[in-house]
Image (cartoon, rainbow, N blue to C red; front, side, top):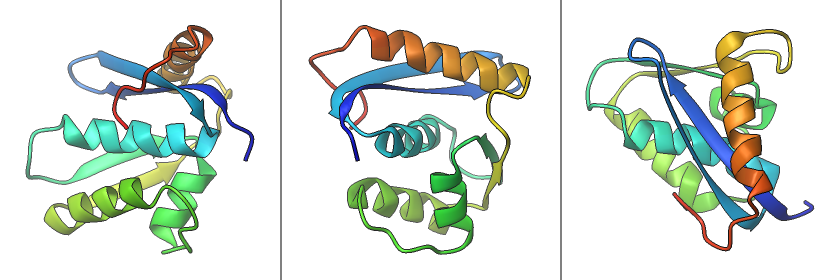
Length: 122
């Protein structure tokens, strides 16, 4: 539960579009979940959505209806999106050569290194 500067990022297949932001004094789990929520906020409504993440926190909690112990507002927002459309969240191994995963990791790290005194997307 260590807090510090963090970054989030997502990549949209098809239009080759990467988006990132960051916060100071946050946990890694918060940033991983925020990346998913930010992607959903910016996707057109309707139709199924397939999200790939290297976050076991996000994928396991979402897919197994795990117990939510923190980040309640973000989990509620994700649940609202899931009630409106079909969302599949797939876990992929991080740092294993997946080009899109490597890109979002790089984007998130770049933002985190800036140690922003603000938060984009919270």
